[in-house]
Amino acid sequence: MKSGKNLSIGIICILLLAIVSGCGSSGIDEADNIEKVSSSDFDVNIDETENTSLEQIEKVCNLVKNFFDTTQEYPINTDIYNAEMDKEYKVAFLEYIFNKEPMTYYVYRGDEAVPHDTFRYTFVDDIGINSLIVKKDFIRAVVSSRDFWYWYLDYDGDGLPEFIVDAGGISNPYVYKYNPDKKCVSLYFAGDSHNWHFLNSQTLYCNCKDNLILSRYNTDGNEIINIKFIVKEIQNAPKYWIRYYNQENADNIIEESVYVDEENWNELKALFYETLYAAPSLTFEEVFGDFADPYINIEEWDW
Image (cartoon, rainbow, N blue to C red):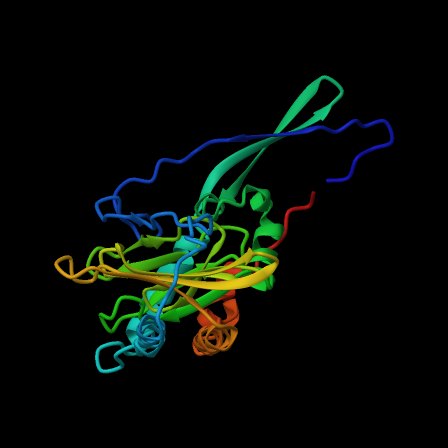
């Protein structure tokens, strides 16, 4: 909308929130439990006088190596997931991403407010980026931005795909699941904060400079393994500390921490990067292909 010579324009957006009930193809199934990753950080208490034996170091290093050896991408079971299901699943995810609700904005001409009815995408609430309220900005960010990373893989080991969104440090990583019986997309799993990122099936990581946290979760969304790599400056020299915590078996919880030398540290960090690149992210187009055309080939707002 073009402004005239003497036109003073102010825009106020009033959101008319639509209440989504039931479980359509673009709704969240509120009956499903949504697990939130318990928060972890790098602010840990480390015993600077801790002495660790070569046996302890070897034990922890082997535990960490086993973690990486068992970090994998579950393959989608093509015996049950066919082309017809592929279309159904992807269209359902697209309906969820591009779900709309009414919105009114006002253009002021002098003292007169002229209302304009339009819509917004509710997905911005999920990913916590309300600055993408304008249609063209939303599509540009979700479809084309390098800040958005996507995966379409079996996250929980049931043979069927989940849609994973990681907004590259802008918002939390999210895992979405489609229920073909209810014809509904639901939020299956959410990372604790924007510092966390998707690593591979049931595994997230948090990386801050030389420090690293790895977390693995069960199918209920509960953390079962937590590994911390922490560098501390002690007496003007870097000290490399690793903490391993495993509660897969509640009757046999494993908790170990050791200092390691730089060689062991670099070897284990190298395994992390190998794992990181083993499941590369996809672009929006690579995930949805031609199914996305009806959703993204639309006219932009004129303001």
